[in-house]
Length: 86
Image (cartoon, rainbow, N blue to C red; front, side, top):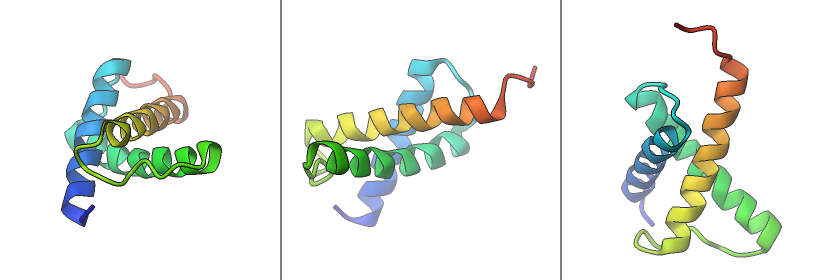
């Protein structure tokens, strides 16, 4: 997968993760979290299950891995950031 595909995949995964968790961090922050979360999900899938799930843009396992990694990262950012914003 090329770098543009990684960015698009991560951005969409971040927006989906943000929507699923009901957290609002902003579009740019959600995209950044999504890109890093997709990499985190790929790393965890390889480390835990010994599979390379981030091979193809149109593969279901690629999307699931990216979204799960993004959900984990959005959740962690929410824990660190707290709920002090109103």
